[in-house]
Length: 487
Image (cartoon, rainbow, N blue to C red; front, side, top):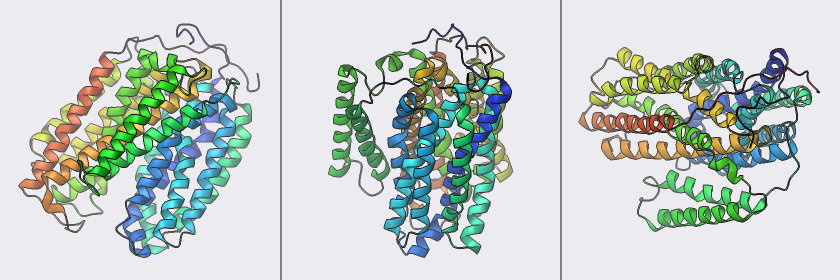
């Protein structure tokens, strides 16, 4: 592993790096925008296909496919190069989008979404890795302004565009819309990344290790998705999935310790910064995703907002997070003790969550949205912090596997916390079952349910704070002599 204090070579100057980063951002926008549009139009899609019962699988199948292959893309990009793997990811995503657009039934749509996930699982981690290729850890935060802009566009534009298509056009246009974007992304990637510095090294892929890791993730994701919904947590089906998960993880650990060239190098997992950064991302990013799903329900049931008005809860959270991720990313490089930035910001989130946990129905909609925006502002800096910390800890030829592994566990954390928050809402407000989405329930059951959701968010963020406190800060590697593309 590279000494973090040793300046690496081969980074590009700012102008060349910016051209590459801006060129690949379309791939991030592709995945982010599609997810929000599909979520907005999902009830219309289910009604059109006449299958409401399996509606959730449109999201679940995509999540399963994306999470399972994320570390595989990272590892293969270390072996075969970023450009080749990103082109493959875009191509697979386009095939999945075409299958979704042509889907005549819910089963066919679910299959298409799974294929989309197999491509989408490589888009975000590969773009993050490419930023690591072209800029030093000290320079990377400046590019958070570009990456965060994609989430602002998708958060604000996704619901509007998805709602418009669902209401005025056929839902399949959501997926037809992806195809020209995939074409442009493919061309940009093919041309621009020819100038990307190459840090990949030739070595064998541990196929058995990859199969075991993917195999261990699938039963865990299924158990977290089905538990408390389709099957009881103590049912034989859920218990069998957990047993299969534990068994496969044990086999993966054995393979990692015995393989000559393991799928995830032991040196990467042994690094303290890698472990701390991944654990902090597991909890902090998991809270962001879980709140994004739960907050519209909170707006409708506890604040009395309409379905369309409840979208402002998502906009408040995500916009706050996007803005502060830009500011926080730039602040990271200004402090020797850079972990103070996410520590202080997470304390802001906790402070904003405390009144929501104490009196979830005690605020006007405007006041509640203000507190939610503060929660987002506090969570934003953890995004650049965790990526920079993890990438700063590994050598350039391990950027792909390190970034992919972190994103893999971030996705697992999101699924775990979403499942936990969903169980809290169902347990605390059983009266919501069977009610229409726009029904207003400001009673004791709903208030108590969301009280515990916000309390659980505080607990998760305190764990993330503890992880960051435990981090032994390494000096962020500074820029080396700028190189020109192709050197």
